Image 1 (spheres, rainbow, N blue to C red):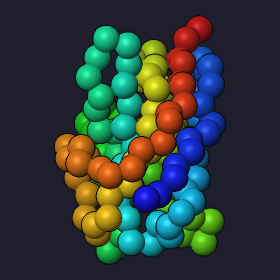
Image 2: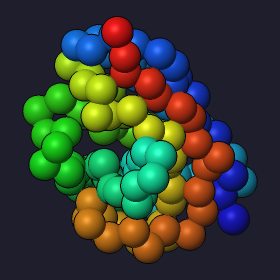
Image 3: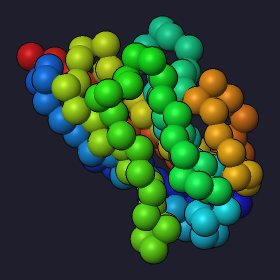
Image 4: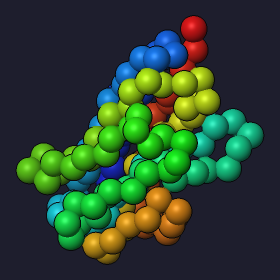
Length: 124
């Protein structure tokens, strides 16, 4: 089982940036696909981005393409989500999750371990 902890959330004005981190323990992330998800009040959870293990390929939801960038640092056993040009509709609790497989798809929500989440609020 992988233990995950997200950090880096907060309050930011529209157009601002945040960098979320997902720190893992209990296993090395080298063999795990990693996903970032978010859930806004009253809405279903949605996939935001994911990164595979095999070639580091990435996938993004259409709503964040060109604004968000996912990356992984296996030496630090961590994954990051750089979020630029944030919009009020990006407001949500953001979660990272792991799946013991090499591939990923942002539309696939089948992950095994989840972090507790970090709140991102975009407001003026």
